[in-house]
Amino acid sequence: MAIPYRKVRRKIIGPDRKQHEAWVLKQVDYPPIKFEDFVKECVMSQQVSESQMKGIASAMSNRLRHYLELGHSVQIEGVGTLKPVFNAESAETPEELDAQNIRTVKVRFFPHKEFQDSLRKMEFVDLDTLNEKEDGND
Image (cartoon, rainbow, N blue to C red; front, side, top):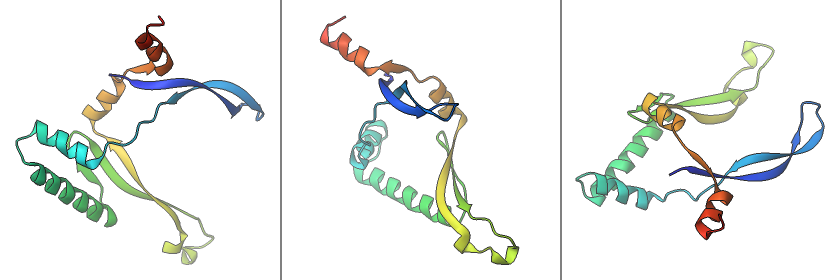
C-alpha cells in the first residue's frame, strides 16, 4: 500500500517575497484509527484478550503521560522516543525568567532506526491517477 496524494494549486510566497500560484502535492488525510479498532487489531496479532490489551494500552498511555509530565523522555522499542520540549520568551536578566516565560509545550518524536527505515521505504501514489485506473479510464 502507498500513501496517497493529490496535486493542488496553491498560492505561495516565492523567493522574491511575492505571491505566486504553484502546484504542490497534498497528502490525502484519513480519519485517525479509533482506539477500539487499534486494540482489536493488536489482539488479533497477539494471544491476549481484548480486555487485557485495552488494559495494557491504557496503562502504557497513563505511564507515558506521567513520565513526560516529569520531563523524562520515553523510549518505545521499535517506534522511537518521545521527549517533552518547550519554547520560552527571552528576558534581559536571569531574574526576569521563570515558568511564566514558557509559551508552548510540545512532544518531539524521534523515530527508532527500524521505524525510520520503514519511513524511507514508503511508497506514494497520485490518488487521482489511482482512481482513474480503478474506474477503467486508463
